[in-house]
Image (cartoon, rainbow over all chains, first blue to last red; front, side, top):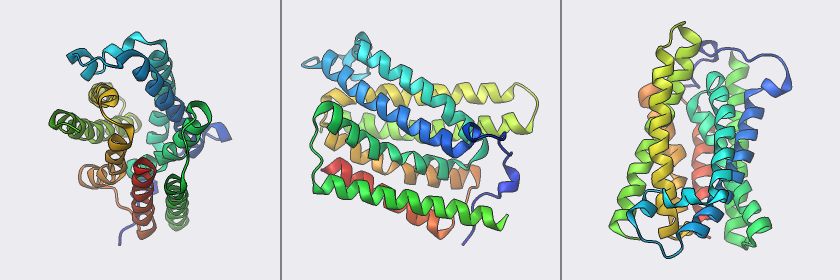
Length: 145
Length: 112
């Protein structure tokens, strides 16, 4: 079984915690989670009962300020994502962004009143286990370099 | 969920994978070479991700989120496969197990 793309082919980030690509992934996850919730609110506000072509390609939703707040959060998260891509393999970096599926249900519960049942709770725990395995995978690969 | 919604969601997933690969290529080229070629690759990546975003957002009000989100569960797997084919990235067994667990977890969260 092969290891990750050799770390020697990837550049080294600038010193300092803020420039750590894994912290940037975490910030990306937080901002993307906020964006998802804002976009859902915006879509519900603007497209309820609207079946036009403009609605299906996402343009009706642009009439809501909630949607624009979501887009702003997405754009902010995008900067962190591009930065992290400079230093991390795409497969690992993208898999780590699944943290969104931990924070979106928790945010939906807190802000939108969604219920977190045992199935959703189990899913969140499995995602956490998956992310821990990914972290171990990265650590093992970096040990070998 | 209608055939139109399914079709748009599948196109959106293809756009997501292609867009991420273009973004990674752009950022890798930015490190390696000192020309503006990476900007063009970055713009193609952003354009492709815009297609994904508008389709995903457009489908959202027309289907239940619990039906739309499981499709997102397979996206890490699609990205890892795309990165293996087009970027020659490789995962160790922990990486594959981690990706598999997160996919299962996302499907469970979405199905609940």
